[in-house]
Image 1: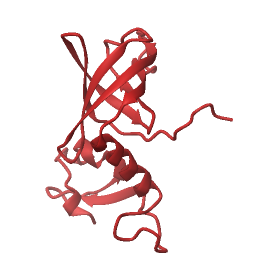
Image 2 (image 1 turned 90 degrees about the vertical axis):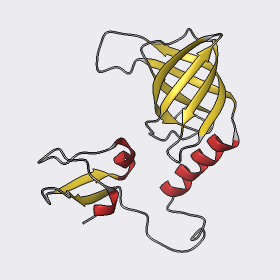
Image 3 (image 1 turned 135 degrees about the vertical axis):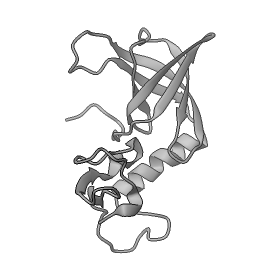
Image 4 (image 1 turned 120 degrees about the vertical axis):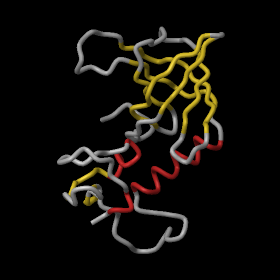
Length: 161
């Protein structure tokens, strides 16, 4: 049985965290209603209070306040260096972002909530605009600028095969 109150959602978003006058950068590796994990080489000690800015995919910025619950700093590459953050204050941009993730994972959008429909596929097949090779791309990785496995050209979501 899991001790987690909230389901985590894997999202890689550029993040800046601030304590006092010092600013550091990192990448979120997962988000939830109650917290997030920031991958960084500069984790703070548990109990530290941070101001957090997350740059959302729609171009908006979310400003949060959080408490470091756990910190990991190791030379072992397979472990995620960073901090687990419990959110103390959330803005409406963050709340709507996480709600949107939850709804999309449940297969709902504002226009079809409550209707019977099939969930969106986890992967898309995108034809490369340069060499026409077909590439299988995870839907959640589209925002990370995927590249063609054959020629290395950036793939565009508009080129779904």
